[in-house]
Structures are given as structure tokens and as C-alpha cells.
Image (tube, rainbow over all chains, first blue to last red):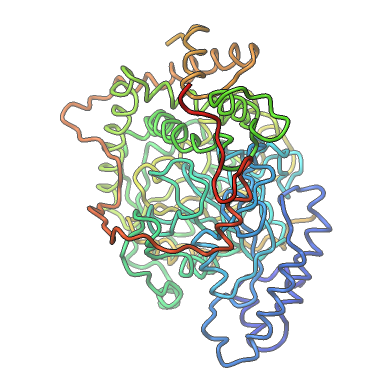
Length: 500
Length: 97
């Protein structure tokens, strides 16, 4: 097995035992990026020199008695390019930030560096995280490593593809309405959206402030838990982070070897006709497997599920239009005020910089949001959506009183072809049908690989993901159920199948 | 909800976006389509329902109202990203015409 194919847990054990070094791990990841990323295009920036220097330092620390203070010492990771990384280009996959160098680290990057992890570079995304395919990147789409003609999902598609193809040991994504879970599902890996407020948003390029939350894309549930333990926690610089203690997830997982006493809810509104047959079959088999492992299943009802997307596509553009107002050509980024710019006055600096810098989906969302928030329409759109959001949240909370977690497909189908949904924004929005609920309610949710299915328009079988949605702040239950499932299946062992 | 070209132009102006004629046409159609879709929210009875703006239940998160120092190298880097500067100030065109 090549070193880049190791899980975080395996690599830590090998480094501790002195069998391998962080430099060797990093070199294996860089070699893999070099080998396959010309075709996959997951990375926007690779910081070869910096990461090797950081790995050398990690190897030095490994030799000291302080090594135990660094839970991820020497582990190479990639970060989605809407997360600020000091001294490194941070573009949000937008022309408007093409040359932007972040002056500081996001809190989650700082925490990972303090835990000893080493940053390999930055990954592609839908521009400003707007999308479910990574087709919306201003720098071109990423490709799904299972079938290069297909999307890796989005918006954290570069992170998903990079983890699936073993370019790194784990990656960071952000999830606003499915953006970690969708690529995890399409790429056959594990992706966690933590509870809203569990991990800090300080230093993320804001999209929808009321649902944005960063989380890990990893090779196993255990690895996702290891990373969350590091990035979670209250941050003074993000007033929406919660003071709840971050449990030692791995200790909790070790105590559980079956699912006796675990009650899983199946929301009937999520098992609709639109689900591809192959996806349905794999989900049914996963349910049977979990039953065999001791879980009890109960049917629950979430009648407002179908309003999740319309609510999300009011709230998101509204908050996007406000958050993207900061890209005005004055402080940083593409600007009509730079030498040779033709702007005659302040308005023109704004309008020309933004007109030139933003891509189509960002412009659409800014316009929908501007309209929805404009005088005379606020009550009909934003306020109405916030009220329906209350109904969605309340019914999900109620369902989670009857069950420890909920199980649904992550997406109604497997990865679709690149460009298949270009220029049809509404069709792309419908991709989010199963993932918006947990985002609007702020609940933790994880996507776990549970099989492979043929798409309606192709031969190659592609990964299917199941989603578990938990109670607020209870990521631990998702990890326990996911861990027991992965101990008894091998869908997460990509290197058994992936040939690229 | 059909938005005409003048409305689209007005929204673009409010949003400070310079759009081409082609973009105005295209986004006009697409926005109308999305708004039609969103209109289904009207069927939900929300009488007496409070809006949800946040989900964690946190209230009144206070901190000392005190200025904090920031790392000098990060201040310099932040200023380097600005298109027009005068020493440690970012220059803008006049605001009042």
C-alpha cells in the first residue's frame, strides 16, 4: 500500500512507531497529485515547498517528548479554497479573488496547524461555494476520479475528489446546504457537516452565514471524528460558535461494537419516486445491514421536506447578496480602480469590478437576494422563508425525539456528467433535495459510502452515499453508527476498486 | 412572477453589478423561473409562526468592547491587497459628488 493511501489513523500509528516520516507521507501525496491531478483537477494551489518544510518540522517534533501534544502531527491535508490560508492564494474559485493572498489563517486552519497537520494546498469548488457539481468554478471543473466525465459533486468537489484519489489524508470543506455531503457521496468517501456553530466560521469566505459550517472530508468515519475533535469548539472570533464541550469521539466509538439499542428514523418523505433505482437498492441493503447489526428502524414523517429547497433558495441568495457586497473593488481582489481601470467614479468601481469579477451563478444569487430583500418584498420572501424554516426545524427536532438519528440517501442519484446541468439553475438547485433540511435546522449530518450503482446514462458503477442526520451537537451518535457500519462493510475502502 | 427588463436593470443597479445586454436577458428569464418555483411557499400556512434566524439557541453573546492589537505582518499583508493606497490608508474615489 502506498503511503498516500493510508488513513489518518493508520498514518499516525506508523509515524509513532517510527516506521514512516511526515516527509515521506507528504512526498507520496505530492507524487500522487503530480500523477493524477492533471486529469482530476482537484487542486487550485499546491504549496510544495511550504508543506515539505512543515513536514520536516513535524518530524523534528516527533522526536521530542512534546509529540503527544500534537494530535495530527505530520498529517498532510488539503483545504477548500474558500478557507483563508495565511500567505497562500485564497480564490473561492472566483475571478474576483484570482490573485488574492489571505493575510491570516482561518481559525480551523490555525487549529489544524497547531495540532501538527501540514497544509498541502487548496482545492477547487463551485465559485463562492454556489453549486452541487464544481462546474461553477471560474477555473474550470474538477473531475470525478471514478469516471472522469462526471462531476465530483459540490461545492467542495475538489476536496472530495482529492480524498477519493488519495492525494491527501483528509480535506476540509464547507457545507451550507450539502456542500460537504454531496461530494462525499459522489466520490465514495465520508463527509461530515457538523452542527451549525460547532466549528468556527472565522476566516471562511462567507456565503450563507446562518447555515455555513466547515467540516472534514475523510477516508473513514474515524478520521472524520479525529479531525472534528481538532477543529471543533468555541471561537471568540465567531460569536455563533457554541460553548458545548467537544467529546473524545474516538473513545466513545471504541466502546461500541454493535448497534443494540440504537433507533434510526426513516423519514418517509425522503424515500420518493425520484430516487434512481440503483441508489434505492443500495440504501435498502445498508438499512438491512444496520438492522442485522442491531439497529431498530422506525418510520418518521417530515411533511415540510419539499419546501426545503424553496426556503433554502430564498435564504441563501439573500445572505449571499449581503455577504458578497464586500467584494467591491476597494479593499482587495479584482478592481476597476487598479492602474488602467476605466472607472470614473465610486459607483463604477463597484459595478465594473463586480460585473467583471463574479461568474454567472454568483450574479444570479446576488440578484435574487437583492430582489428578495428589497423594499416591499422582504415579508413575501425572506420573512416567509424564515417562518417555513421554523416548521422544518421543529419537525426535524420532533422526529429526533423518536429516533437517535435519521437515515436518508445523500443524493437521489449517483454523479452526473460534467455540464449536464449547466445553465439550468433550477435543475441544479433540486440536487439539494435531501441535504437542505439538516442545514436549515442546523443539525449534524454525515454521508457515508454504502455501495455502487449504475447511472441511468452510463456503464461505470459509481459510489452511493447514505446520510445520517443527528440531534443538535450530537455528532457522537453519527460517528458511532457510521463506525460500526464501516467495521462491517468495505465500501469505504476505495483502493480496492478505484483505478486511476 | 415575470420580471421585465427594467426591473432586472433596477435590481442589477441596487446590487452594483454592471451587466451586458445578453446577461440582462438571460438572468431575467432565469430569475423569473426561480421566483416562480419559490412561489410554492405561499401554500404553507405560517400564521402565528415565529421566523428562525438562528438555530443554536445562543443569546446575547457579549465580549469586552476593547480594541485588540493585530499582528503587524498581517496588517501589512492585508493592505498589500488593496488597489490604491496612501501609506497605511486605502484610497477611494470621492464619495460625495
